[in-house]
Image 1 (cartoon, helix red, strand yellow):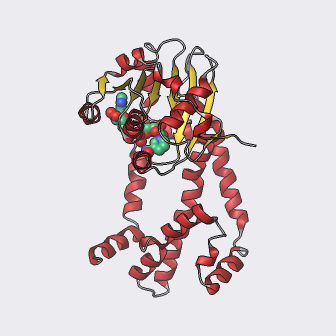
Image 2 (image 1 turned 180 degrees about the vertical axis):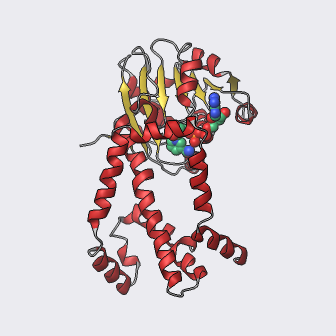
Image 3 (image 1 turned 135 degrees about the vertical axis):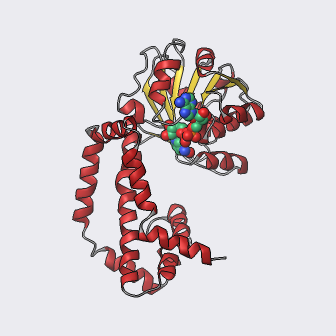
Length: 327
Ligand code: NAI
């Protein structure tokens, strides 16, 4: 059975005498640094380039330093900068300075899985990846609410890697509910499959339903409201998380329940399966990772074009018209 770790499995004491170097004070960096400080960990340095993020860290009472200095002084380095810039920052500023026996902590498995960052064998390489946006990590901590994390150990140079990962997970507040152990590769596959398969399929359903119903003469405002603007599906997703995918069904009318369950049977799953397999192959073979790397090197022209196309699509334009009319 997959291991799930709780507060009682982790000891904050092992972090008490360690210096934490938080590289990046954005979504995750800020939330994790503030949560760890509120958990009683005092030796935190925020390392970064001179920008508004580093300024905010200083305003919020953290000692700040360059990436190089923070990396040199830290026992645990938190690499909490965008995944696209992390390899270059690691190579230039962290790799030459990091101490033997230090731990390198990631919030995503991407760069390790695809070999864009190859840490020295003398380092612990761990991951505490909250399944929550940074703002949620902070707000949950403050309100005493729960959010989960994935924890992983890729390299255990000191023999303490897992205990350090679990202590970090506890310090940021994510062993309250349970931190699930995975590998870096598994975390990466799940993350990329959600982004490249699950959401594209959901976007396709939503845009096709919109197009079809508007073609049938139903007002676009009403279709959008029915689809997601009402936030009813958001509430349903919350109920699915709390009660279960199908166990939340009794919250719907009998007509709805029968319609959903009987027509679910009719959906052709073969296409979905083939799409999942194709994306999985692209991810596992590294084809997506090299395509995305090339796209960044080429100046993000295709990415910009795709975004412009999506924002100019009929559903996006209809949303704008609806928003202008809604109170
Ligand atoms: P972010 O985009 O909020 O990072 C901003 C920080 O990166 C700033 O401090 C900025 O100064 C620094 N930065 C940007 N370019 C830099 C450069 N060239 N050199 C040095 N510092 C630079 O990053 P975010 O969203 O917090 O992501 C950090 C990690 O957390 C990533 O691995 C991401 O996959 C992971 N993650 C993010 C989540 C989120 O809430 N966005 C959720 C779960 C994981």
